[in-house]
Image (tube, rainbow, N blue to C red; front, side, top):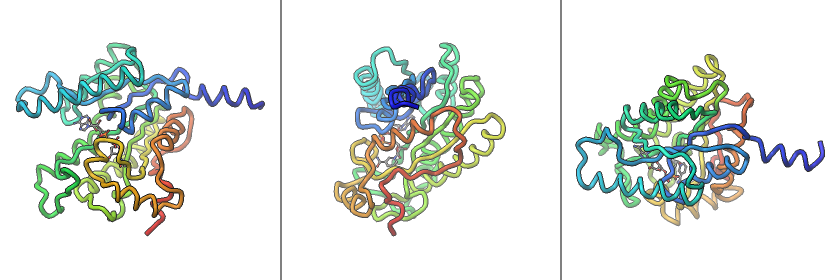
Length: 286
Ligand SMILES: NC(=O)c1ccc[n+]([C@@H]2O[C@H](COP(=O)([O-])OP(=O)(O)OC[C@H]3O[C@@H](n4cnc5c(N)ncnc54)[C@H](O)[C@@H]3O)[C@@H](O)[C@H]2O)c1
C-alpha cells in the first residue's frame, strides 16, 4: 500500500463511528484529549458531563453551586474545544435515573454508539492533596468512591445496552492507575481500592460482553498527571517529577493516552480484558 493511501486509512480509522465520552470537566480533562483524537481520526463524539439533573431534589446550596459550575465549565469546554454542534448530555453517575435518562436520550436522538470512554472518578477522602488513611475511611465514603469510580462502569454499560444504544462490536475503555495493584510512593488509599474494582469489573465485563455481544472492554493505567482537576487534587509537582524519573521513557502525556484509546476504539480488534499501561514504563519500576 502506498504512503498516501495508508495515511488516508489512518485518518479515517473511526469514520462513521460514534463514541460517548464521559468525564470532561475542563480543558485539562484527559477525556477531552481522547475526544479530540477520536474526532481527528474521523470519529464522532457525544459528551456526558456532570451537572444538575432533574433527579437532584434535595441539594444543598453548596452542592448545587458546585454542580452548576461544573456543568457550565463542561458545556463551555465542549463548545470551545469540540464545536457547538457536539451533542452534550448531563450525567450524574451516582444516580441510576440519570444514567437511564442519558441512555434514553441517546436512543430518542438516534445516537447509536460504537463505544464509550469511562473517565469518571471521585473520592471525598482526598482533599487539597491530603489523603485520609484507609483506617479512617467511613463506610459511606468507601461506598461512594466505589460506586461513582467503579460500579458506574457497570450501570452505564447496562443502561446503554438496555436502551439498545451500544452496538455489537463496540469498544469500552476506562481509565485507571497503577495504584490499583501497587502501593504508590504518594498516598492514594481509598481510591486504590476503587481502581482495583474498576479493573476487575473490566475483566468480568470483557468476558460477559465478549461472549454475548462481541463487545470489548479494556482499562488504561495512565501516568500521574497534574493538568486535570482530579490530578491536581491528588498530586504535587514533586510526585509527577518523581514518577517521571522512575519511568524509563518519562511520564506519558495525554496525547499518548488518547492515541491508545483511539487504537482500542477501532472496530474489529480482538483485544479485550486488557489492563494497559500508558505510563512511560512507570509500572516496571519497583
Ligand atoms: N490525573 C491523573 O493523574 C490520572 C492518572 C491515571 C488515571 N486517571 C483517571 O483518569 C480519569 C479522568 O481523570 P482526569 O485526570 O481527567 O480528571 P478530571 O477531574 O478532569 O476528570 C474526572 C471526571 O469525573 C467526573 N465525575 C466525578 N463525579 C461524577 C459523577 N457523579 N457523575 C459523572 N461524572 C463525574 C468529573 O466531573 C470529571 O469530569 C479518572 O478516572 C482518573 O482516576 C487520572
